[in-house]
Length: 123
Image (cartoon, rainbow, N blue to C red; front, top):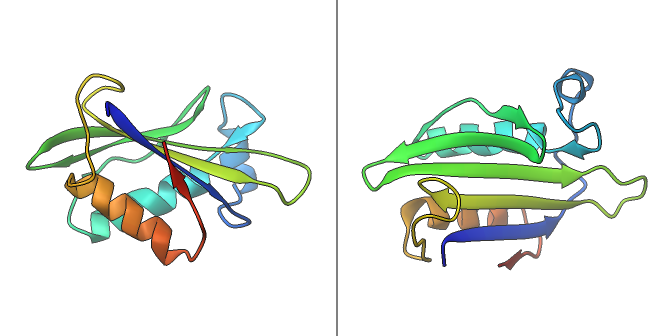
């Protein structure tokens, strides 16, 4: 698979007013999720950049001995409690290099989502 995409329902990771002001697309959040994920990956020993706003959510790069990754975090704002988070993990630039379940960043992201105690799916 060229990338891994994790989907999970969440009531957490609500963007602050300052984070909402930085959005490129006013209806697409993910800053809170991206900042949390970046800090957790740093705590796990990866080198992680600060997330930046894009029209599709929030992106940041992660590096380790295996290479450079692009992570994309998105949460569409919904007026009800049905919020679904999306984390895309790409080795290199999105869609260019194969990524599998033995990859260290993939494994770490999966474990961090599992620790949230929520069900998720991987595409």
